[in-house]
Length: 330
Image 1 (tube, rainbow, N blue to C red):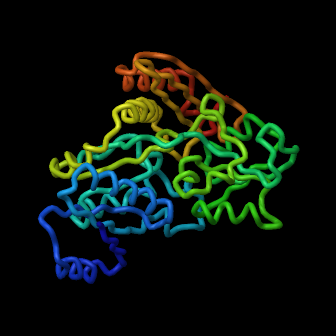
Image 2 (spheres, rainbow, N blue to C red):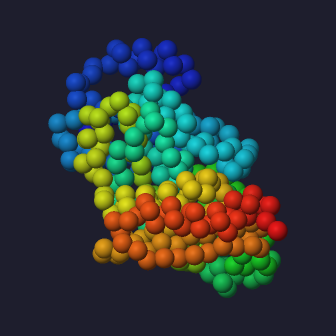
């Protein structure tokens, strides 16, 4: 069993409440965002942790992040880590012991105060194309309105179908799907397959977009369990549900992004897939309007994951990826 705490802005009140609560020596407080998807993901993580460490008790602590509070601006305008910062502050303040993130929301490298303690098995990393009338991305009529809040997805749509109209959209998964159902809503929307599956909404998917062509976000479909670097005990408990193949995939992807210096709010990305002892790696960068693109792919040893990502990142930098993403390409 586990309980859920909602942290208000009045930290003193919350702290006093926690101090008065009956506590266990083997209690781990898990921080998460408060959206339906975040709570569903965290509940799955807690179930896995409980199975691996039945002697430990868990509390879910809900924390609002900048990205949750500010619905006026696009995520790209808010900067890297807008869904992460407040959770890391809660870790440093000892209000939580472990934070659960969608890995794609995390910066490509962590401050020294934190540890990426575990990455559970990855859900489907692909993007989902959901259209009002059942057309695929290739079939939907010219001039159709495609809604997505991701700069990467916008660039990919503009590159593949420059005849479509791309619009920005904010909100959680149900909110975005609801906009598609409005009479004056967009003709299609693009969301992560993983989130739709975790919420039981996968039947809404019209088309699964291939990662080889429509390259998914770094870390998409994966969850990250972050702890304080000074807390090896909690990190060891989290590590019990780590999935080595997923860790290798996201290590390659994050190494690439670290070399470029981008984030989930930029039109640059990479996707890695482990198949046996081999790692298939695809990377993409473009101008925000999708008119100029760099694409590369490679197959290497899975054990060489980080080096594969870094080498590809170096190649993209040499080819002008940073200027491309910034919209300064010639």
